[in-house]
Length: 259
Image (cartoon, rainbow, N blue to C red):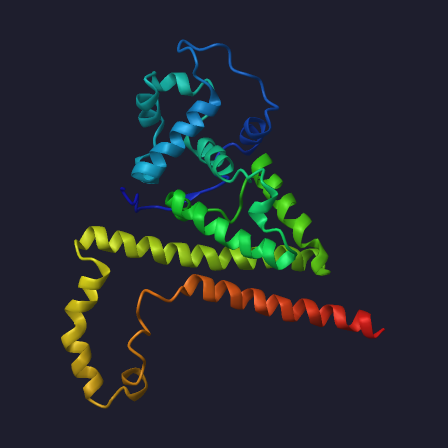
C-alpha cells in the first residue's frame, strides 16, 4: 500500500452545506447520468476501496472515474469534488454495527472496552484514516448513530455530559496513538525490507556491549521477555484507562451514597 505521505487531508474542507445535503440526502438528486448503475453510494464505496488499497495519496476524481469505467465529469453530477467526497468516505466507514453485542453485553466498562477494540480494528481496515485531520468533522448519520449508540450504553456512569464525551475522546485518542504506531511499524518493515526481528538483531551486538558497560543497570536487569512480542501493550493500556475511569465513577457516586 502506498502510504500517501504528504500534506494531511482535513475533514470539512469542502462546501459544508453541500456535504451535509449529500450525507443526509436533503439536496437535489442528480438526473440520470450516461452510465447506468452509477450512484453516489458506488462512488463513495469505490473511493474507499482505492484509499484502502493504495493510500489517500492515490485518491482523485480521475482515479475513481477510471475504476468505475466512466468519465470524470460524470462524477461531478453526484459530488462536487474530492473534499466533499472525503467527508462522505469518513461517514461511510464509520457506520456502526447493528449488533448490540458489538459494544459488549455488560455495563459501561464493557461498552468502552469494545469501543476501543472496534476503533482499532477500524483503523486497521482503513489505515488512511490516520492521514486525515478530523478535529472538525462533518457530522453525518453514521457519526451520530455511532455516538448515540455509545452514549446510550455509558450514560449509567453517572457523569456529566461533557465528562461522558471526554471518556469517548480519551478512548479514541489512545486508540489513534496505538494504531499509528502499528501502521508505522508495518511501513518501516516494508520500506526497509527488514522484519522487526531482523531489525533488532542488527542492533544486538552494540546493545549487548552497552548493557555490559555498567552505564545502564536498570535496563541491563530487565527480564528477557521485556521487549518480546508476547505482551499485549494495547490491551494493557486500554484496561488501565478503564481502571482509572472506574475509580473516578465510584468516587463520583460515593458522595450521593453517603448523603
